Image: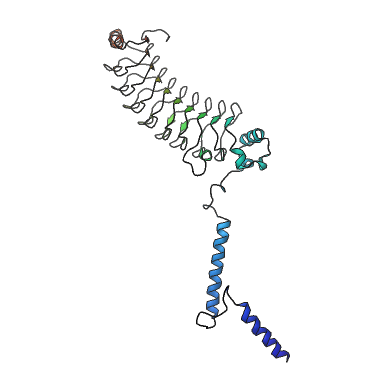
Length: 339
């Protein structure tokens, strides 16, 4: 009797424990599943569960924008402290939504020696960023990625200032995503290398300050995407020559500073496309001769300073006669200070 009861219990257990959802342990033809069938179905169920787990817990390479957000507590010390004070919250309580209220950051004179990728994560409303008078020697590529809102193409940053630091180079693509930028201030660094493409994408840029660096050469086409640029400051560098056509795409340029360099001559037609140029500063160079008619296309030029160069008397006379036809408001070519 006991044996019969045990057999019945075992039968009931086998009849109910092997059922699939919505079915039993038989196939559509009423045949019992073999052990191989059951193993296969178990594996299918395991794989399905694994996919769901992976979906809910993504591995490296599967992270979304939300999941790659860098916690304020994990950022550089200077950025963590600034945001805690600015938002009046401890770092672990600051949310991504909190950061959208930050529009202005000034971290000048803070002894900062480096910036890290992720420091600006989530600051999608930032319009002004100042890092002047620190000891920053480089900018990592991708440093500005966190300024771009999810689904957007570019940030809303309008002004970035990194003057009086120790920057030595500008890599290609370093300013990617900053197409709203209007002012870029990099004066008084130690920049000696500017890679081709460094300023690509800065279609809204109006003012570019590069004076007081160690720039000796400029790549061809370096300014080609800066069609809205109004002022370009290249003075106080070590530039000896300028590539032909270097300014051809700067149709909005009104002010060009090239003083205090090592320029000895200029390519013919270098200013031909600068139809809106009003001020041109070429004093304190090594210029000994200039192509005939080099200023002829500058129809609205008002200020031209050429003093403290190496122009012989005959060249001074020739240039003066050419420039007189332009009717300049202020012109200096002899050893005198600009007005």
